[in-house]
Amino acid sequence: MVKHYLDFEKPLVELENEIEHLKRFSKGKHLHIDEQIKNLEEKLRRLRKEVFSSLTGWQITQLARHIDRPKASYYIQAIFKDFVELHGDRYYGDDPAIIGGMARFNGKPVIVVAHQKGADVKEMADRNFGMPHPEGYRKALRLMKMAEVFQKPVITMIDTPGAFPGIGAEERGQAEAIARNLKMMAMLRTPILTLVIGEGGSGGALAIGVGDRILMMEYSIYSVISPEGCAAILWKDGEKGKAVAADSLKLTASDLFRLGVIDEVIDEPLGGAHRDPGVMADRLKGALEKHLMELEKMEMASLLENRYEKFRKMGTFLEGSEK
Image (tube, rainbow, N blue to C red; front, side, top):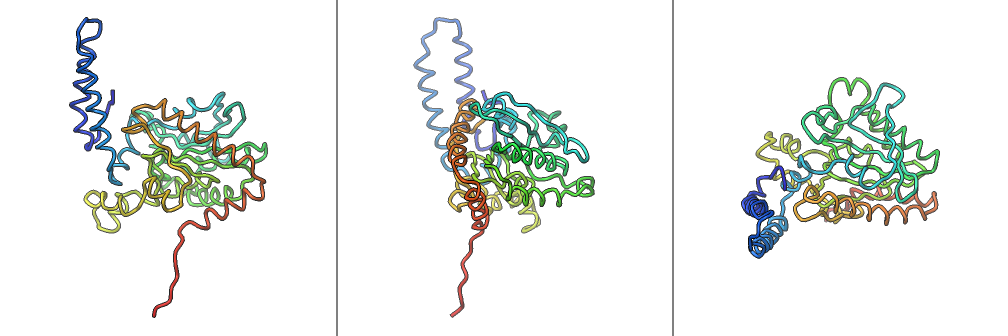
């Protein structure tokens, strides 16, 4: 049963509640209502398919931020074995908005680095809502350099509104930390696989997103700025213009795949990953297996050249002369 519904899901609420009520009422009783429940479930499936077949950019943004959406920690536990979290950047401290460490994927050692949002109010505060400080990015880079030394693949998971813009973060070199990550990841001599599992915001996302392959979940987003931020700049109203901005930014997985920014869109269960996290984890694992196998077969020189060309081609434009 879904805990939280979004505004556009309201047509589903009554049907889901009715089905849940009938199942509870009939439990342990000899009532012949199986056919009634089956008909309601089929009606719900059709309605859900109709609702989710034509989502706007803003509605997908809401799904990407959904409070019940599985976080990186869930996927790490579901997909990897023997995960050992490593802490600290060896300069300042540890940042809980970035988690990372060693793990095994299908028996092979890998390094995992991820943004971690909270699953409840307390954890969200503890994790700074998934917005890293400079020490978070320096911790991520430390782990990725370790992967390079031991020749292990790097798997990153993006789920952040953006890097933390506070005074302390700026004083400790937020921009420099992000820039250094971009530079070093571009040259890292080991395969890098990036998954966008929720919200991918600005340089805070890109700082662990320079990958040989970039995969996005169907209802995730990836953008240089949030819809609210874009609307506030362009139209001086972050609330009223956010829906228009979300469509204009082309931040959805389908848009970015069509534009050549990402390499694959991973389908989510109907209604979003939070409706069946186990199925979503299996789909992510399958996609990781396929792409990691391909990357590991490549010569290092070719891997680095392809990575360089991949990001150079983004933002393609045409030049023409006026007649």
